[in-house]
Figure (tube, rainbow, N blue to C red):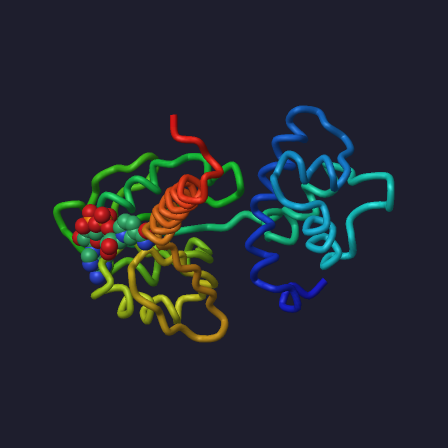
Length: 224
Ligand code: NAI
């Protein structure tokens, strides 16, 4: 199956399916219908069937989905059947927080090294890694078959560092710096902006408040 044909919206929903199916598998659930999955996940059953049809359906009509098979297949589509070797660049607050989060390893994302340009941090230990100087970056990436880099550095440095990474064999950049990166075709960039998520939350609170107010205005809700 060529993932390039699948829309990014569908790909964006796969991790959530994967998470829910993982929980069902851990609970010993063997089969689930799209309707049952829909009830748990708060997505319509037709959306689920449409999403899964992109990958050939995964199930027999009227018989439900085999939870373990679906979990494994979605994991495979997401590339989670392989391990990924990561480095973190920028050992400040965010970089250290990510390095200390052990759960990524359960999904096969292995932090192998952490780098920073600040000499006072060099040699400081974070879990099983010592913070290294940037001079060692290229050699370390090649020697340790690193395929992903996490950028937790200010945006002023991120473009330059991404440029340095381009020739090293890195395949993906998880970019927390608030800047768009121009990288060669073979490198994928995933930008993370936690503030986007917060703004969505603010919007939803706002919308809820406005809807509640308009219910008062229209007399649908009696004021007590
Ligand atoms: P921080 O100041 O604690 O850490 C940044 C680290 O990067 C420092 O240790 C610094 O020495 C290092 N650094 C700077 N330039 C470098 C370079 N050229 N090469 C290697 N290391 C370099 O900052 P914090 O709080 O960890 O945030 C890091 C970045 O992530 C900031 O740019 C911030 O705006 C961004 N950020 C993004 C979020 C998001 O949701 N996308 C959330 C939080 C922070």
